[in-house]
Length: 632
Image 1: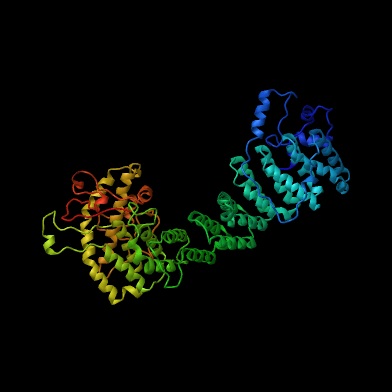
Image 2: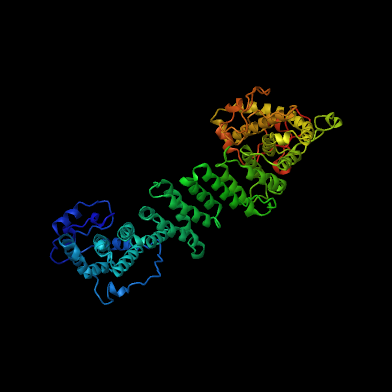
């Protein structure tokens, strides 16, 4: 905001001093009377010279409030001795004298602006006003910015002006701090070379606790980006990169937030290809040491850049994420499930990459790494979110869900990758009981505890990847499917009564009732079991079929997955194929139920139900066997 908008009137001046009223130039007075009344730069003076004790106490409490930040304005360039602003024994400049200087400089700037350099002494007196009381500080800030442009070529006066404004930015009075912060960009308009230095100061001021002051700092920083984006951004990244050394974590956090919220809205005239290239380079440098949240924020910034909007740019962005995750083409790259930090980074990076994969940008590199390196060791991770040993670590289900989503856009893989998926499926599937076990009474043979969330993911991955001709035509893959069929058909038949019960329960609820956590879990359980049944039907055919479109239980029904155009076929399970189930697959079921397990309904349905902690042995009606069901 320009200094001309600060409200100063001759009437207020008359009340502020004991001497005769000072005559202000007519044009200046008109400007001052027409200024924006909502600025807080100049306070109203008291209507009576002799203030009451209560008024003095109130004014003192505002002025003496602690400043929210301390500025480190040290600079390698030589500084002007502060004695040049005001000598130690010199009296503080009065309000009347400030108006006299303003009148003189204003008159000269209009009559003979080329001779303004001869009034340097008066401008120095204005600078001395920042050492006075509240009224002098506010008037000095206003007048300094009004006449600075006439003295901006003088390096000594530039240094003195910057020091004066930086002092005001640390003032005890919030109104004075805000006024100084608003005026800082005007210095850069006259002297663009100061952008980097002032940007550094404003970055430090981002730690302001006052919300209004914080908004002023953001506005001023945005003005500097528009004046000189390169110098401003370089200064901001210096603060980000050195925060760990200086202890300015809040400055780093708020500077990153400023970049994330303000940069995407800038026009191409400001974010030129050169500036975008600079941003990419500095962000890559910063990514060497970031938190998961910071990484996510920087990826969003990069994704908003025009250079990275097209296919080639997206591919570059995916490669950056892969490097951050430690995923490389080197087959010897390892994965330690006990390394909590590395596992968390891998999961977080992969989540960010999922948004950029498509048919034209396949996820083959990520999928191959997960299948060959991560999947064989996944069983050492906590099973699900309820596991007592989790401690915030990603779980087996977290990783399997990522691999299931990655497989959708994967290109051709080595057969070794698919064999790892097959081995995981064998590990999870129950073995079909012998005839002797099947002939026992209802409480006889028991199944191993089944992890249906795991099974949904691994069945989906195998169904998606095994369709590639180089694998499905192999004799080994045919033999593998023959071995799986008994277990697959046994599992499918075993959960039919469970599915029927879930359907009956879900049918009793309205759409609003299905949003309740307990009912949402039942809906998710139904989607999981239906997906398992659907995939088993496909794999049990001879030869196996890969036509059905399967929507993963945690995805919305509109987010269809599959690598080929599918033929819509009616399911024998009451017409509930992937398309017919859309009425059941609501948003509530896909979001609220993640990270939780399903408990079967009450009544005789729950007679054999035990808690999750007692090895997950809930039962289901109409079966001789016990089925462990839980959802991570």
